[in-house]
Amino acid sequence: MTVRVPAKVNLQLSVGPIRDDGYHDLVNVFHAVGLFDEVTAVPAGELTVAVETAPGSRVAVDGVPVDDDNLAARAARLVAARLGVEPNVALRIRKAIPVAGGMAGGSADAAAALLACARLWDSPDEPLLGRDDLMDLGADLGSDVPFALLGGTAVGVGRGEQLTPALARGTFHWVFATADGGLSTPAVYAECDRLREAQGERAPWPAVSEALMTALATGDAKALGAALTNDLQPAALLLRPSLRRTLTSGRDFGAIGALVSGSGPTCAFLTENAEHAGELAAVLSSAGVAESVVRTTGPAPGATVI
Ligand code: C5P
Image (cartoon, rainbow, N blue to C red):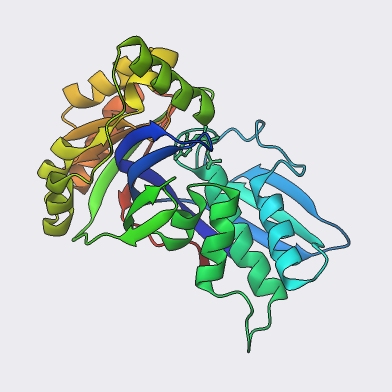
């Protein structure tokens, strides 16, 4: 059973106050893009995980755990426990989504493993686990996992796991600049809190950007580019100062929107059309401001059995 699952970029990431459970209340506008990991689940004697770089990709996978720390392995255990079966499955993960890159690659693999294992073990005629149940299991694994199942464009509140699909017209053309090495999401959130405290700022209660929603609903790329925001960006730039140059280069070369993706360090650039995306990707590659440059489009579908 093989499932293909997309990366995401956050079109709006508004970080509210820290909660008692250590998470932050968010407004998180997720947008799935056409950069996919593939997870294959094969019945086996025991639970194993193997991770490889997808054909044609240059993603470094050495940092990905192959033991129980792997989110896909935890997803398999969760599905098995819910269905009352043994988690005896070999998971092969083919990665094209940057590792610890702010594009929710780990969450994507967990979402794919949930779906693959449910299809492997659940009754096809009378399934115990529907799409909503998988979304609930996903939320237990990580804040971004339910969106990887859903795909498209959606507004997330709470930790980011409570989703409402957003109206989005047309196709947007993106260029992503990956960086050498990842950034730890908890470290970036902690840096965001520290910065706010140092500046005597209280975290505002996050609200959905009307300008962003209108830009999406009308398919207006220029307006979308102007409305992109990420509250984690200042923290990511402090932890990885070289990203400033990457963002500036993208803007200088004509991107109509430029921001750090999620907790970074991948930078996302919105362009006007496919041709512009191709040109921007070429100049960013030769400028040497990124480890690698990938162009793709959004929105993309959520986790899908192939
Ligand atoms: O939910 P997930 O495990 O993906 O979150 C990773 C980390 O990101 C959390 O441990 C927390 O530090 C931070 N986080 C947060 N508030 C959120 C989502 C994530 O502080 N709403």
